[in-house]
Image (tube, rainbow, N blue to C red; front, side):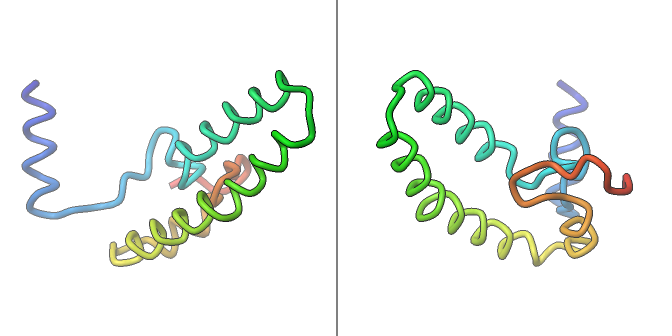
Length: 98
C-alpha cells in the first residue's frame, strides 16, 4: 500500500511513461488482447462474417483509438525512443531493451 501511494505521489510531480512489463514490447496490449478474444469468437462461429466484423472493428475503431493514444503519449519525454522499441499492436520481441 505504501509503495502504491509513493508511486502515485511521484507520478503526480513528474509524470513519465510506463516502459516496463508488458508495455516494454507493445504499446497497445489491451487492444491486442481484445482482438484475440474476438478472433477466438470468430473461430467458434465458423463463418466469414464474424471475421469481416472483426476486421472492420479493428480498422475503424481500434486503429484510430491507437493513433489518438500515441498522439497523447507524444507529449512525454522519451516517447520517440519508446515508439522505436515497441510495436503498435504486435510486440517487438527482438528490439533492444530499455
